[in-house]
Length: 432
Image (cartoon, rainbow, N blue to C red; front, top):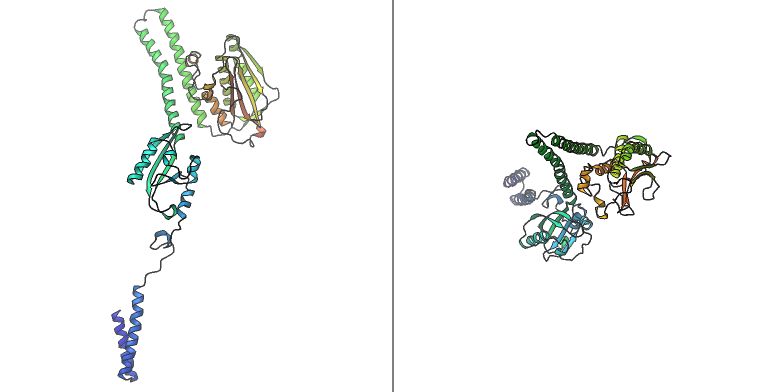
């Protein structure tokens, strides 16, 4: 800056000499130009650069103040349930996701009444006390058992939520994930148990035949018969497990073949006629002669009716009747055709109805094993019907018998029947 002023003064001096100005006028002109130049250069060198759009001292806000209501608006739109709890322990704010997960939230209520779980109360209390961030898990037993993961930390003072500091709690419902993990664990444990029992029996009889019963023909024949029965039981279990795995693998793929549902059910019933006569069971077929076409997989639909008829006969005493009939139209299943398999057996208790399609579930474990059941038949039926967008409706009365009704979309209605959740349909009577 000083060099620039000196140059300007020199220019003025030279000009004054050339124009033959008086010393007084030259001095005043040089001083005036030096002052103006000095002032201009000082402002230029010390001027602050203009902030570019989207940048500045305030970061990404371009130097603009964030409105007080932006904080609540951002939290409101987040899909994760969030709770804001004041230093006094009162609920100050809950976004829409939190209100959907915890519908009984009331502004101003103490957080200990929001979720009555000791782990939740302890973690939030500790963070309000020391300000440290915490991650924790807890289980709620209000109504149904629910499992959660949560994180709590302190939120700095923010005008949008008032002058008081708040703890922000993020809560995620992990109930579905927990149940899936539990089902997987139960499946492995049950499958291992079902295979281990017959395998241990076979190994025990082999050791007996190798030692004490080596020279006993009568014992050898008896033990070999038992070993064959246990081996067949293991084979049935492995076959059912493989079948269930294949069905689940293709459950998302819709079948495309147009099939006569009543004819498939009739063909399956005819296969059981010799066995029914042998067991002293009356097998009746009362299917509507008018064909009810569906879009399906022939082998899988045959497996559905085979499993249902086989179960009905297994759990019916000699002299009982098993009936396969067309189900009358039901307003609860619009656009669907139904086929029922009924028996006159002992029926099933009401409290066990909702578990019938679970893997390895049996109403009576000893009776099921004696009959050669694997506990997977109805689970296979459920997954096949899931693939076909169908449902199974089960009704049962103790001492009178049970009815299993398969509902499938008619071929003409296939594309307009709404997708329903893959679940067992409730029945009007006590269901099996």
